[in-house]
Length: 157
Image (cartoon, rainbow, N blue to C red; front, top):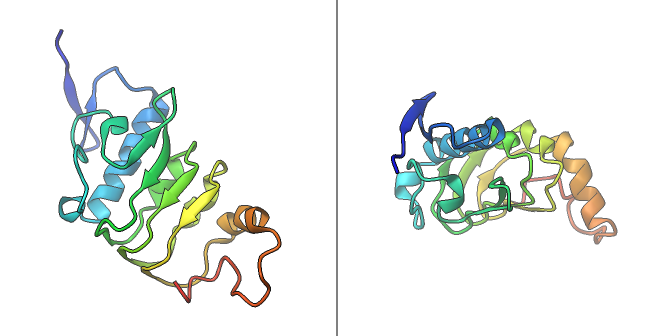
């Protein structure tokens, strides 16, 4: 059996093996790898390769091969988060804790309607979490301690 690999917007993709949604998710993960120096990550096996993203280390997928989990905490990510993260439509758990991320969180995080876990602490992120992402998080934590900063304030991150 022959496997054909082609380049799509500079991203190696397995030809005709990906749905349009899977191809878009693949592009988003390549953007993340490029913007956060994946070559220097502690755990990066298969990242930026022609393998299906479900085979990439620290990526979890559902039964349809769609990205459900990104567990990239404590992994030496360095850089800024790409706006294309919003393309991970089925993402439920996004964990970037204890890395070297800086800048603001892209507003497209608010497009992740399945998101129930977001870990951003231990980075140098600034500003407020985009309003689009804030509402679901406030709904999730509900009756949080009023003495704590609002969940959308990244100033103590």
